[in-house]
Image (cartoon, rainbow, N blue to C red; front, side):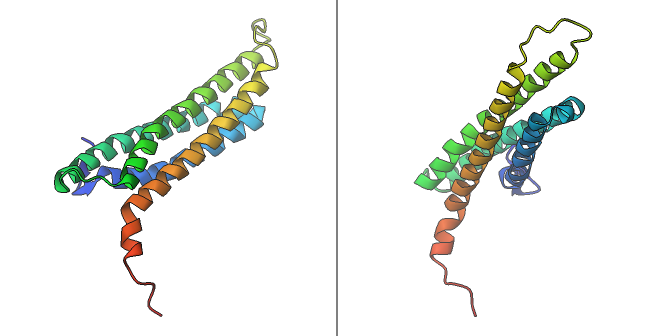
Length: 171
């Protein structure tokens, strides 16, 4: 299922989506964490974008495992250290996006509960919203840093030897 589409590895196609969606979800989460009116208006959309980011990372992870299995069959199990670094970082990426999704969801639920005080008594102290907002900021920064680390290790695994063994541009 996660192996190929039209003869191309799914992983190569979906990682580019993750490189765009994860930072976009992180920025959106930070924006709604910083502006409570935006959180109350657009919070569910941001949680949805965070879920898409997590789903994209899941597909990237699964398709990466399929691609690695295919390449291992072709290369008799020879696996470079750069590839293993990329595999390890890519496996962790899903947890970073799930963390961002979880903390943004908690932020939205806490803020909505606090905003609905006219309908029910406030049971969540006011300090909780800024604390969860700071956690959202931290999760967003960590997700962006990790997506950069994963991408950097993947590009090294694929392109380092090719660029190292080629001459510079013709002038």
